[in-house]
Image (cartoon, rainbow, N blue to C red; front, side):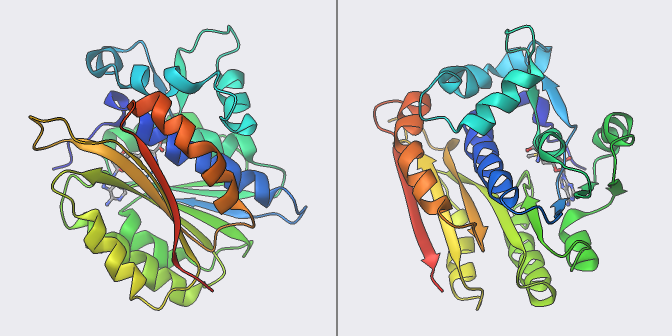
Length: 277
Ligand code: SAM
């Protein structure tokens, strides 16, 4: 039974690092006119009302996008897309990953959106089924990814953004990306992961390091755990296989200041190559 609902977390610091990284990746894809494929293995419900009961209850956007929207180091393409989404000038709707991919979609670029949860799939179908060149799959994204690669067009980007509510998600992410990479070694694979006090993500990264996959960049933002804290998310990271040229520099420039703005004085940002060429 899946209970995770992204509406509670939309626009938080994890969404900011994830979505600004994706915006930078799409921007790089646009440097060539050749169309690309975008595969979203865990799409969620397209976009989110920041004034909904769910969002107001957690107030996570207040510690995320609302802290950095006007920050000079926020990548301009990410700021623009959020502003386009909120033409009144008041930040009331936050675009999720399918909406971001659609914002960057050009004629010929193809989107494949997967989602397992029944309700989220209904929302996804309602909001995205009329988008051009967009296929929606009601299925498990870990299993689905290796089954649909290499995609057509072959140039392409994957976002894998599991909720990790089931602990096996860490190893499923590893297995799925390894299998997909075997069939499609030139794809760009972006995987989001949480950094928790009782952390499983390091184990997953260690396994990726030994996997034989080359060119893996990681970018993380986190803060020191509070004195009484034994659970909870202290930050999160993006692992990118085959990152576009200069993504490492772009993230190194912007993340330290953005992390501090969202996570406070003890925040750190770490951008490093897990595996080189
Ligand atoms: N990627 C979205 C974004 O950036 O706006 C947020 C996705 S949310 C973190 C994770 C989503 O994955 C939830 O909507 C959940 O229902 C869905 N999900 C959970 N397990 C899944 C699976 N095995 N395959 C596909 N979707 C799954």
